[in-house]
Length: 128
Image 1 (tube, one colour):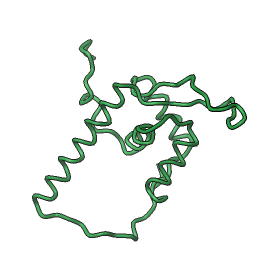
Image 2 (spheres, rainbow, N blue to C red):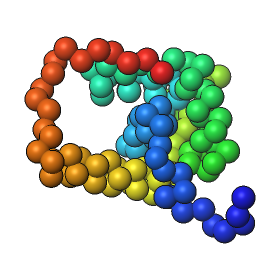
Image 3 (cartoon, rainbow, N blue to C red):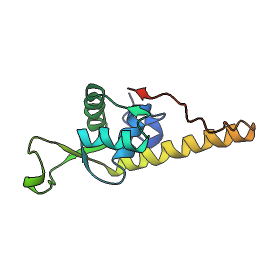
């Protein structure tokens, strides 16, 4: 492994699980269950990340410096003190931005081939 400073591109492509976790943290800090519920809500239940998958991914994201645990806590009467809250780091934000740009380029290429799928409401739910 090189001692060079990692760039966002070194982390691409992201797995679907990592992409959805980072996206869930893009607008606010969340605890694990909050991440799971946000992903389900944002994808209309099509993507469900199981707790074991989530916490394994969180461990790797912490190690890679893409997210960090935060000490900020909501009102103790509204929260369980055992919950851990996570947020994107600046580097995590740059990685997510790079991944979105990569995905946009893939979509541009698909459109250039006139491959434009229609809406398919019968898409199956996916669990990770």
